[in-house]
Image 1: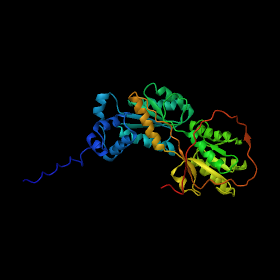
Image 2: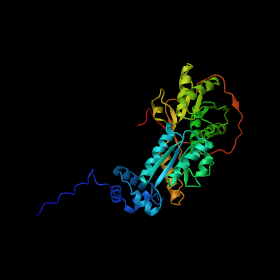
Image 3: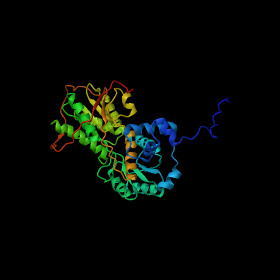
Length: 374
């Protein structure tokens, strides 16, 4: 009996290029299922899709874009117009877009705009159109950009990352109102008579959503609504706003993002007070540094990478003429050490009258943690 033949040597340059059958074997599914995932079909169960996407990532599988383009008459390229890749949220959203696009066999072309003027955003979409993208994702959260995004949607399908509202373009919805409401209710549950608010720029829809959630919680609880103080998402603006709310007698502060919360904490400690014994502080976003501040920051956790993935799923649904409803995700409140019981404290805040109105329901879930996340 002759010895078994030696295995065929790998092709020049290393291991054999993975093919669709390899993905199917690793994921434990049929090749047709892998093909549906790659095409962005909605007829695949979520857990199965995730298993296939993981197998694609592990193997480094890349569909033959040239062959697919001949058959489908598509470039299999997604465009992204991004306002900033330096801010924590937009940067991670872009990571999620690239991961999901790669798993579906699409490449990504990113155009970063220097400002959010309508003309600048329109030029960015025009640049993408010249590169024959099949569709685009907009990460441009200022109101002034809405018209440019809506206009681009007439040239090729567009999807908005959460932020813009009222543009008439599909988005990957993220329930920020409910999250902000839950954060404010957490502070009220600790015995604070009211909660001050350091908000982001008023022309950002995300900022308005978080302010709405804060105001909703106070009105529902029949509490005084202090005058909100606006920052620009930076720690420096949070520091200035912190000095202002302290002068107004704040014992609890809900901030529109973590960086402004960091500035507020600095203002509190510089004034001779402590967090949370004198003033409780809640942020929003759960940046990596939040768990390692002194004290660790209570904040609303957002999965920005998942937002990016959802944007791709909604866009691929539009490209295949299907309606994909990803559903609203409610960010979770992560309770750390910057919030505590209300102290017996000084004067009350300046208030503004607010009428009760139709208010959104579900609150964000509370996820207590101890120290840094594992």
